[in-house]
Length: 136
Image 1 (cartoon, helix red, strand yellow):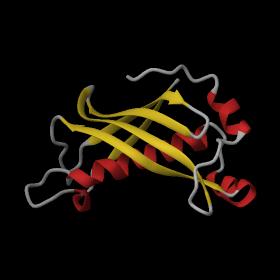
Image 2 (image 1 turned 45 degrees about the vertical axis):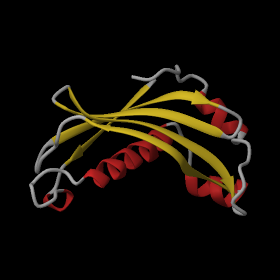
Image 3 (image 1 turned 90 degrees about the vertical axis):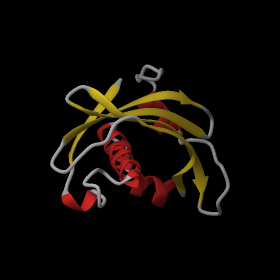
Image 4 (image 1 turned 180 degrees about the vertical axis):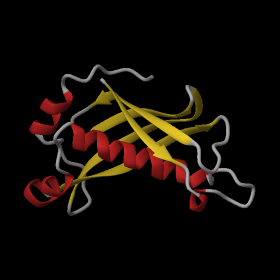
């Protein structure tokens, strides 16, 4: 299962050279992951409130391949790569008109309010089960 999320580049997203500031790709992909979870029916606020767990980024491997610019319409593709007992690894790409501009492999860990890794909620695993693992 691949999730697609469109985003437009605004002036505030760019640097002095007029291209997307490198850290904003991380913001774009974070938004796409949040929307992917929302589309799966996962309420992150309820997960925090009811189970006392949240996701934190543990590791990122990013490749900046080509620049995006002001007013570009981008597509962020996200796919589950691996799911473990307490972590999720996802592959994401930022594209403009089918051309990959940025790719990311991110590992998320499920953490308790005390900052310790905990098992993923069973309901979350069930919702992700139909997703076919594999990087895009």
